[in-house]
Figure 1: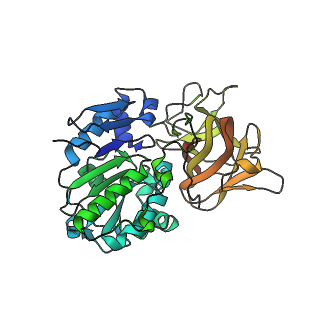
Figure 2: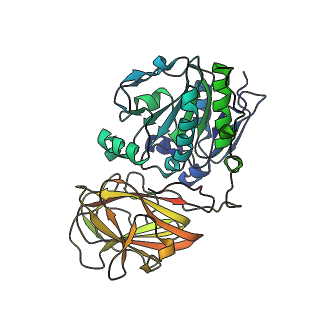
Figure 3: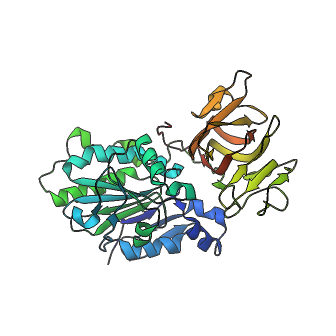
Length: 402
């Protein structure tokens, strides 16, 4: 049975901790982020695999594409009363797995909103499935707040127990499954990119469900930019996603790594290798985070990161949600105005900082050019938790940072 073109895995996909650990036993972790797999049109699994993650992705393709979609229950359901997927039979359904701290997901949101606006009146139903990466993201109230912030008004299933994720044998964020009018998975895509191809699939399935539909009107024309993968020419390799807790952290430069048992005073090495971070001062390390738990004298206890990218994003927050400052330097100086992410502010004395409140993704650095830098984050107050860094390269698509 041919499945040509019906499954793709792209770079810019985030695997779960469970999937990463399984794959790490076979391949170096940094190769995951360049994973790319295509199924050929003639043979069932004539594939080109670049990087890692292929075996898990192939398994998902075999078990899902052209097979009936799992009939899940939207029990904890935002923007809609509870329903089952089977209640939507006769509609074309897009099941989108997302996570509100996932920058790879956030960069796809403009396309989800476009498709919902254009094709909902024609029979498309988008069902978001929020499956958490971090423990704090299991809270339905935080998911609801994120859905409002990202302007989602389609149904969202809060999948904090991973039931829907495992029913689909899903592998990463973001992941999209197109389900035809008969309830079968017709197409799936993991990761970012190829939005034009995906929109054409939506149109094809809507036409199959209602042959009277006409997509020749200008508003349905797919922008040419959606068919271009390399928005900035040659895409440079950015620093891989960097986790700060000891369960998933792999690139800490401090000798001996993190102390898992108690609050510890750390000393950062004089030089931090590229793509690594170091702790300086007193921090408590947890499985998912490093936490600043005491008062500190200026300039503060710090996390130092040697990165290469155009933009930097930080998953972090105040433990009690009360605003607390985290001061920012780049290459030993306050962030220049043209390098500040939208969450960065300037104090009266010229220092730059972000004000951490709820736990979410914060937009820290937006440099004019792709380059290597050393980023310093300085904490003076207790009750700040830092979880992970993610990065954007010179090919990052434009998306709303608010």
